[in-house]
Structure formats: structure tokens, C-alpha cells
Length: 76
Image (cartoon, rainbow, N blue to C red; front, side, top):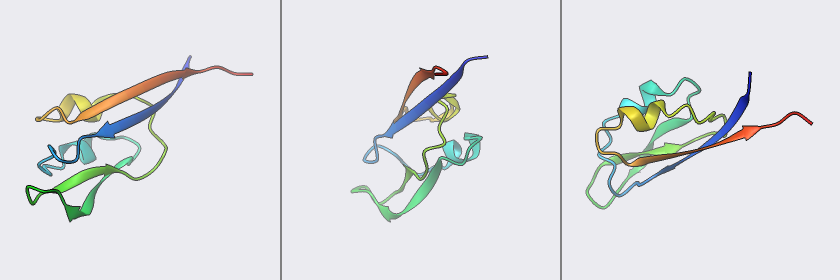
């Protein structure tokens, strides 16, 4: 089975802080920031490097603010 390494980019200005992505992430990669964006919402942010690129967060995001990148990891 292939292993994948992922990364996410969150558009923090468009995030409305619904927290759906936090619940959807199986590796606790996402948490809510204590700070607020220019619209006054606490936004989602990446808090660790455990992302596998599963895309759960992007699929459930109602505002489409999460972009997922995924690369296959090859054994050496």
C-alpha cells in the first residue's frame, strides 16, 4: 500500500470558523486560532505535520477555503 504525505493551505480570510474541518481530520492537523481574521471569525489553522492528504477537511468545508496537496512517499 502506498503511503502519502500531505499538506494543507487554508485561506484564513475566507474561513468563517465553523470547525467542521477540525472534526473531520483523523490526525488532528487542524485547530482553531485564538486570533480572528478581518471579518472577526476565529479561523482554522494547521497545527502539526501529520497530514496524509486524505482531503476530508477540504470535502467538508462549506466555504471551500482548504486546498490539499498530496505526494506519494517512496521507500528508499
